[in-house]
Structure formats: C-alpha cells, structure tokens
Length: 187
Image 1: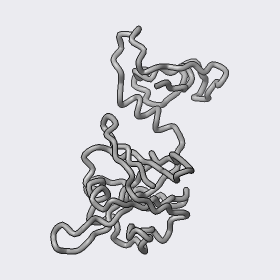
Image 2: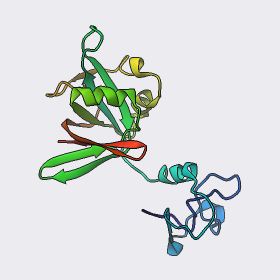
Image 3: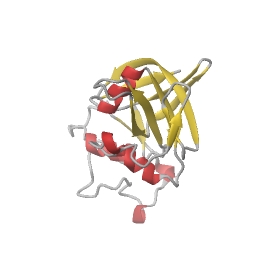
Image 4: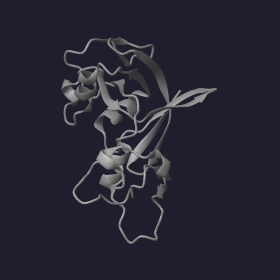
C-alpha cells in the first residue's frame, strides 16, 4: 500500500503539529511538484508505524458520506428495528453484476443487525446533511439514531431516509474480515 501526500512521512508526526503538510511548504500550501510516496512496508526507518497519523492522513482523502441502514430482525419480541450508521468507506465494486461495498469497524452492533437482516440500503447524503451524518455517526446512540428521522422501506425492507439524495438497496453477497474492519459486499 502506498500513500502520496507531499513529502510527509506517514509513520510520524512533525512535532506537535497534527495537520498534514509538507514541512517544506509555506503556510500549509501544497507543492504538488514534489510528490513522493511513502510506503507503509518501508522498514529502512526505525520509526514505528503511527496508526493515528495514518488515520489523519486518510481523513484528508475526500469521500462521499452515506448512511447504511437495515431492519434488524426481531430478537426480543419487540419486532424488527431500524439500524444504521454513517459510512464514508463506500465504493462501487462492479457493474456486471452490480456490486457495492463498505467497510465497518469490527465489533459494531449496527453491523450485527445488518448481517442478520441479510440486506442493507445505502443512503447517499449531500453536503447539506451534516446533521444526518453526525446523528448516525455517534457511538452508543443506536436506539436514538432514527428518532425524528423520516424514512420509508426499500424493496428489501431496509430504511430509505426521506432526505437522502440517492439510495441503493442491496442484499448481502459476502462479508470478509480485513484487519480491524469488515468488507461488506452487496448486490
């Protein structure tokens, strides 16, 4: 795996500054003529890999924001319950057959509900919907995420958020463990 980000070494921070910038650039502007790659597998430097710094760098990679939803099956006699979480790691995988994927963190209780439902809906948010993004992103708020959020059922039964700019209804094709995340493949 390689990262292109100026002359920044992805394995360490420069002093106490956590902004991602090339120390040779003035006032934080990027000099794209000096792009160099830094590989995570480079063992010539004795500096240990800094996962926090790597996360900060990857946080500067612009992605779309989605809320992935499902109807968690009835487990306590109260009926199926809507579940959902904010996912920025959503991607198109294939056109033929139509496949998409996302990467939730291992141990997610929301993912448990999605996995047992065997289907999910990807709700694409606009840049004007940060309220939905943060509502579904907060840990430990599973029971309150749908409070005050209007939705209707997709063909699979998964919630389509009424304010979503687009939605993709999927059946779970496969789930693979990838490091500290899962890769969920949907058809």
